[in-house]
Image (cartoon, rainbow, N blue to C red; front, side):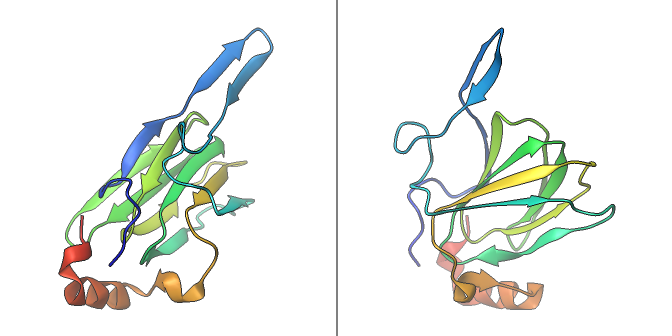
Length: 145
């Protein structure tokens, strides 16, 4: 399995912040401070109370999740252990290398989740439901972080 050369564990990244009396600006620019070359950008917003997003893993795709507004919880699973992250500021990103399972929930009203991706969209890249993910891990033990 080929992974992005960015590390093997989910990691919180402090993003650069430039602030003055006009406000703040945060930027990502590859290769200076972006963990990968960005191929795709999407964002989640307008989630109703109690909604959940994610519920899948990726085979090759790395993602960087950022709470542009509001907050939400990201639960990450490696096949054995769960880890929980709270994203609640626009200068903090959660780097998710493959093949970690992710679940996003507890969105505050007005929350916006920006996702930067290392790949173009490919439906064959997704592992879901959970039993498919666990089967993939069992067949590919070298891909686990």
